Image 1 (cartoon, rainbow, N blue to C red):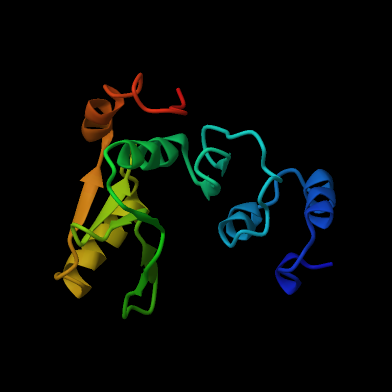
Image 2: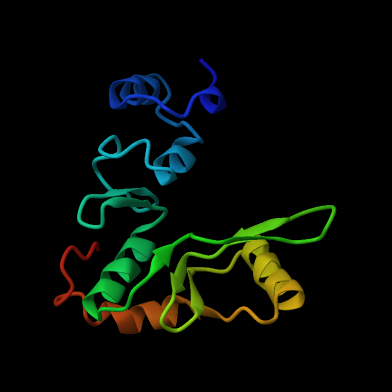
Length: 156
């Protein structure tokens, strides 16, 4: 069975596929669309299902940021909208980590800025200048982490 060919797998089928392919590259995508609830039970530094948040996050920082937003009672959506850049090569799509509807802002959580991330943000400024993106970098995350003893489920 090819991975992309079937998205309506049962949890048992997904467990079997993951058992045979522990380094499966597609697990994040499948989890995002909700097909793997309960399959990735233990969060990792990178990605995993967070039982307390009832969804998959790509990193513990993103999960902690969601917990922080819940703590301050700020409504949010995770990876909701995707933008396409009118380019022929390189990075053509971007999906921001969080959308805060009461502020009409998008928040991007970044522990470090790699070349592709810089390209995406630069292209957003160029092609979608009306979209407000707030970068939550290492300094901002440290400030948020000061509340970790008050925020339920904080990782790390």
